[in-house]
Amino acid sequence: MLLLCALAGCKRQASDAGGPAHAGTSAQAAMAQAEAAAAEGRARRARAIADGTLAAQGLTDMRGMKPKDDLAPGTLGTLDDDGYSELDWTRMMPKEDYVQLQHAPPVLHIGNQRGKQFGSLHTIAALEGRKVRLAGYVVPLAADDRNRMTEFFFVPFYGACIHVPPPPPNMLVHVVLAEGIDTPSLWDPYWLRGVLHIETTSNSMAASAYAMQKAALLPYDQDHAQERRRAFE
Image (cartoon, rainbow, N blue to C red):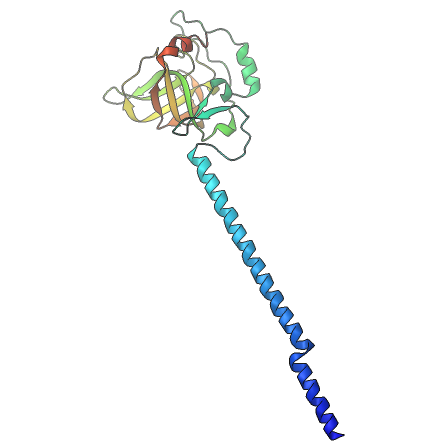
């Protein structure tokens, strides 16, 4: 009898050592390993998503674009080689302002009296910080001690602010150059290229709703210069 009890005890000990309890411990360990592997997989995916997001943001910044926003489709033209998009002057104002512009008096290039400015300071918020290029004309405002132009208004039609009414403030860009340049002809069109900002400027000549700093003036295609002059007449 004692021998049988002893044998039974041995069997129980053996069962405790390598039986169901041991199997349960192994299953728990396997589950813990699986959970750790899954957590590491999720962490790798999160890092990959974060790296992809940063790369996409860097690409859009380099190209002068922004991620999805409220900029209306077609506002900006295609990018040039330097990441600047062509911007039409009429896209710089809200739709209701554009409707009013269509009923504005015609621009008359006669006389010496400058007409009163019309329009508003309403802007397109999504244009803030955009790398753009505009075709238009220069109205000098300030020069350095060498008589080189350092500040000007950029306008959509020639003669604006001089002997014809200034364009609406939201179709006028105030530009401050990093360095002075020779004053260009007031009658020749140019490309203005730079980062556009929403910023109000007002002086005795006119008010503007947009601004650029460290902008560049580039030659305009002379084959279309005359066509450009007639665009707002």
